[in-house]
Image (cartoon, rainbow, N blue to C red; front, top):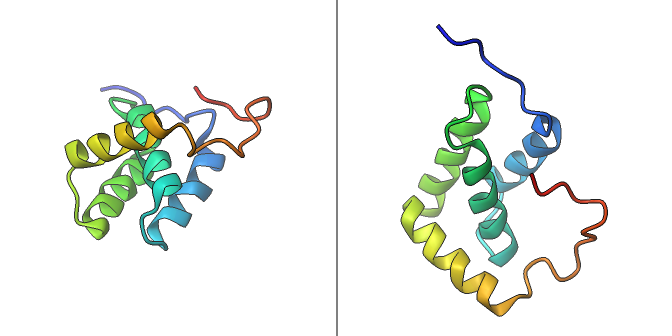
Length: 92
């Protein structure tokens, strides 16, 4: 049996996930969903976040592969995080 771990970014990510659950998709939200899906993939903890990320995908009517295809196109444009302050963001 493995012990469930707490992700160091859990509380910040929880706020983002709550925002995603209550909103409609746009470039920024889709990029955030993809980023968090990757962050929590295989992580031995945060089952609530992992479950809610799947729920967002269902709410938006897309598969994980569709999400990644869309976000690849978004990132090719290079604008989604243009206004974000990368000095204070944790991209881990």
